[in-house]
Image 1: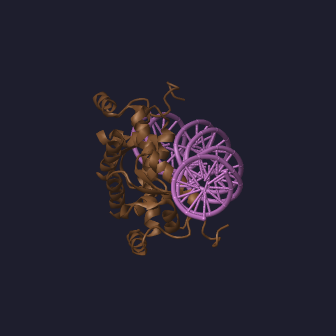
Image 2: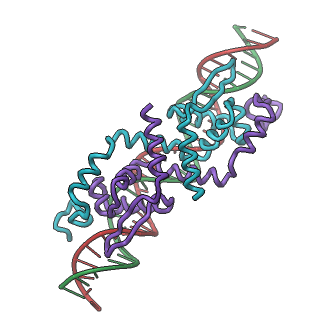
Image 3: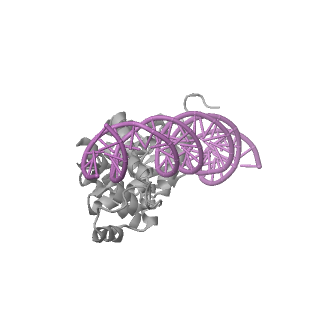
Length: 120
Length: 120
DNA sequence: TAAACATATGAACAATTATTCATATGAAAG
DNA sequence: CTTTCATATGAATAATTGTTCATATGTTTA
């Protein structure tokens, strides 16, 4: 039985108080951490990764992406919406067709670093 | 009613055959795409992002991380396991205590690029 | 060996999420 | 204006996942 019921693990800290303070000082605000996790969650789906890889090569319409990946138009459209909301892709309308493309180069860097990590 | 029931969207492709071929040639194998999404899924959780930020400053034991983040030892331990499985962190045992630290610098780059994207 | 402590882990539950299906929107052509 | 076509989206379902609780593992000290 622990002396202090609020603490479920060790009742002292290994880390020096100054280190604890340093960690807490460097830690971004809660909201920023949440947004970061939220952004990476967008990369955490095979379909969205595939869409981004397709857009690495060229802008492309919803239907072409669907056919290239062998998935339904609806599934792709739903995922494009999520990518768009995260500002990872942008779009341009041409008549009935909507062409999607990468928003900036962070996407390439992030995916590239991920691939590097896996390759190690 | 579409002429070809297998195709749910446009029955021609906007993309030229050579572009389609180029995209398919550049696309990594299915397994690699799956592993990539899998890796980013690890970054897609606030608790794990917080743990990584803590480890940016210093190696630290499970219990200190739990106290710093105000979470239970069990919750942290489960998440450390996932981070370890993805080879994002490594550990070192010292008596009863296990100290965790970052495995390499890809983590900093990836999170940094994510933060840059959000800051734009 | 037994007790205490730090960490790990299995099972269960709640919450999130990707796809499907049906349908809505919006643009061009007849 | 009506039809056709490309895209978007709401609701439902199945699958995945983070935390909690209870307990196991492994190390140190008495």
